[in-house]
Length: 230
Image (cartoon, rainbow, N blue to C red):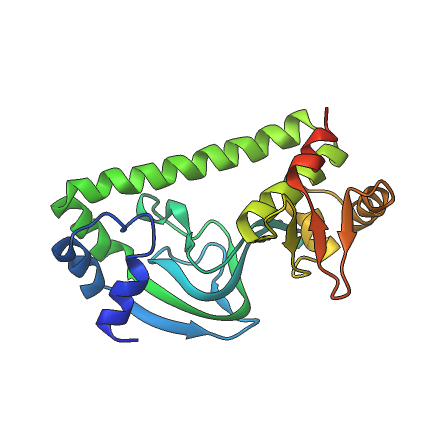
């Protein structure tokens, strides 16, 4: 990918969207484009933290693993998303694993060089803090869901969140959520079991809260699901 293409990609991210040409050029100068194959890892948990990545194409799973090898999915990221959000201000190692679920093309921004750009461009610092603030709110909402809601309600909130992030809006209040997420994936996102997710989805289908099309994709209405909680 040439510099002009990298510039076009980065300009679509909220972090850089309001930068003028000169400011964006400074970021492009330190950026490179790389491709990763499905099944590979962009980085491993505790690897030295060196880069922040911006997804131009593909899907990446961010997950943690405990000493027993149990997986906890932090996020499934697609085109237009960056990771890790803590990269700019964290020292040490990467806080999680990043596995490529679909062949991915990423723009790589070295942290050390980017920090120099931030020092020279205070306005960009403010934008970084805004993006991090949005991420903190998202994480806070997810934590509250785990603390305050039972498993059934957690699954509802998870499906609603995935719809907004990855679903296809059908224009009538319903969304199509492609069958990219297995029941095990959903379980690992909220710390429950695959069997619990399977039983819950079956229950929701019987109550006509969700449907499955011929391709195995979920069809649901977020508003209807949220009403189920009250």
